[in-house]
Image (cartoon, rainbow, N blue to C red; front, side):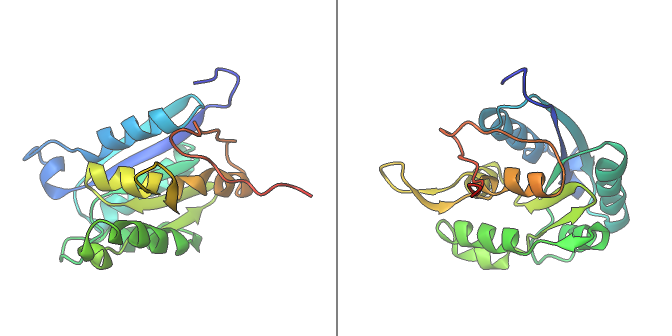
Length: 193
């Protein structure tokens, strides 16, 4: 972490009926915090919410993170499958100004390297004001894979993870300048001519 870098505010929202009611411990938020702490060089201020799979509750939490908490970036985990209670994408799309469908396409491409059921995922992303909101899978292993990408046996990148594009997206919408540890995830920014 570099003290000269701007603090980035990142919202972490886990949507789960069972975890929010204490039936089991949420693993999505801790997995995100661990991965982000290893990848992001900036100081990070986390804003967290563990909520049930209720559309109104998810929408309200996303709006609060983007509008009042000043999050530059919000990651959600859980609620992106085809089950009846999986409504995180609907809640996300209801509160964003612009949909960013490439994020969902890339997540499914990455996940297909590991599981054939990746096609059942409905993850998406969008922009609300100056905040990027991204729906991630709920499993810690899948979170790390989608953010970091697919590497071959030699450690060479085969398919870029989502986080390679996120700092530049945040730049474009007027958020914090995010620097990454290139050993974990190299942020791509086009060279100016």
